Amino acid sequence: MAEATKTKYVPTMGLEIHAELKTERKMFCDSVNDPYEKDPNVNVCPVCMGHPGTLPVPNKKAIELVMAVGFALGGEVAVNTKFDRKNYFYPDLPKGYQISQYDQPIVSGGHIEVTQSDGIKKRIEVERVHLEEDTARMQHEEGGGSLIDFNRSSIPLMELVTKPVIQTAEQARLFAENLQQILRYLSASDAEPENGTMRVELNISIAPEGAKEFGTKVEIKNLNSFSALEAAAAYEIARQSELLEKGERVVQETRGWDEVNKRTFSQRVKEGAADYRYFPEPDIPPLVLNKENGFDRDSIVASLPELPQAKRERFIKEYGHDEQTVAVFIANKKLADYYEQVVSEFLAWEGAKAGNRDELVRLATNYTVKNIRTLLDEEGIALEELKITPENFAEFIHLVRGGEVTSAGARDLLVEMARSGGDPSEIIESKGLKQEHDTGAIGAIADEVIAANEAAVADYKGGKETAIKFLVGQLMSKSRGAANPQVAEKVLREKLD
Ligand code: MN
Image 1 (cartoon, helix red, strand yellow):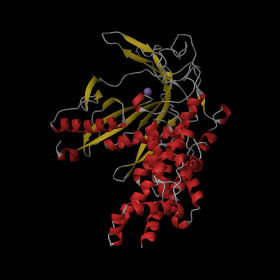
Image 2 (cartoon, protein in one colour):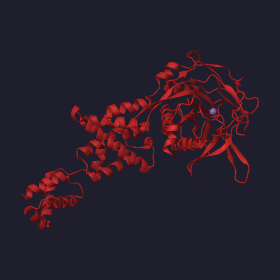
Image 3 (cartoon, rainbow, N blue to C red):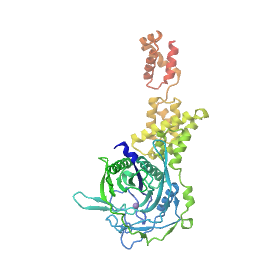
Image 4 (cartoon, rainbow, N blue to C red):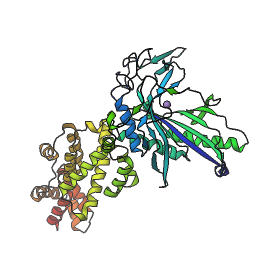
């Protein structure tokens, strides 16, 4: 793509993001909400299978989760809201309509501020967030025929639409990533693009710089990861710019993302907007989201957790993290919580004074990022399953720092702590991992080493400094790693000088 293209045409992008909400039951019935159920058609009932004559009853928890999302995004959370029918035919929607929200969404407005890789912050405005129901899942069989699984039918689904203010592929990815984190912090959704609990669609148009009107809008679907979103956005910016450059026109259509060839492809051409004939859902009365009706807005606000952006800024300020380190913790709230406990326990163990607090925090950070993450990866377990408590891990760092355990022993100690959940100082005793500081015991080994290495001793006495390293090495291996190397060197020198 020619450089000149980029200055001539500007992209305008918006995102439409669906996320399955984490409730126990489905949106309008008592069927279990389990997006991971493998057996087809087990979490179903006449309501979520769309039998005529059944009545939907809204799930209060799902409404509260969308309200929480609205407050977290700084949006306006409606007091008066209602459900509407969105009419269309498809086999995964047996009622012939989806219960959704049209002109009175639960949330209007709001924003997420993203930090670009160049450090510049960009505020991306949200148009709305509404609540609806998911459709069933279709499975197309090889050689013809399709199967339908209603487990997913009527799982509570949140739909967020941004304003058309996204200007770069990176901003699109960052918005989606940030929203994922917020949804996870709120425990509102697993928000995983890979398994469909979060589904991102990109709207994109290109227009000459300074143009009063948007260009023709193209919709990109089946983006199964954030990197696919970013790559698809970049690809479309280039593709559409090139078309306009050549004097051709962009076709209004829906395109898919081909992950293998890293390109978008035409799926279907749109002739004007679909007419869904929205009308108010007659089986659900309008809702008034206030305390009188059981929706305690104040307590929802009060129970919001610290959100990713705020945590990010606090971690940088409080712990001096660099961008890479803070990103590890913000992406993993449980690890962040664990880490904060480790730091506080470790500082208590060390009796930190103002002078060395930074150094101690850095040590706790490195140990947590390296050891804990490595351990989880190696064992293939989640942090909740880890048997090492933050208290014990803090003591572990304290013992290593104090030279209470040999460096070889530290590794064994950690593995044993993970296996048994035991206290590190007890394991050091029982497994004989204690580092030998005792000059008497080390002195005895030093005598053996001196006796057995006459040549090296002669070299040292003749002024060859490096010979002492060899002797220390001999002593260390004789003690099977248990001797403290500094003490070993000191004892050897005393005996030889
Ligand atoms: Mn939708």
